[in-house]
Length: 109
Image (cartoon, rainbow, N blue to C red):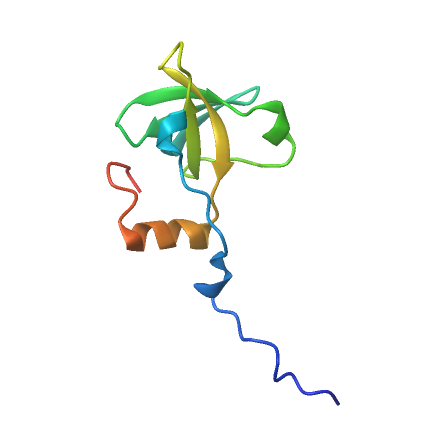
C-alpha cells in the first residue's frame, strides 16, 4: 500500500485559498443580501450603510446561487448610486476568516 506522507491534512483555515477583495477604485464594497426579489434582483445592505437594489449579471446568473444572508461584493453603479451589480459571493469559511480579520465593519453579520 502506498503511504500518504506527501498529502497534507487540510483544515478549514488552509482551504481558504486566494480570496477576492473589493477594489475601492472600481467602487466595490462588501454587502449582505437581505431580500430576494426574483428575476435576479436582490436587496443588499452595503458596508457604507446604504441599502441598494442589486442585480446578478448574466455571467454569474446560472453559476452562482445567492441566498439571504450571503456575503457578496457589490459594484456600485456610477450613474445611479442606489443600485449595483453582484460581482462575487463568499462561502462560510471565507466569511469566518473576514470576521476574524475585522474586515466586515459596518455590516450586520
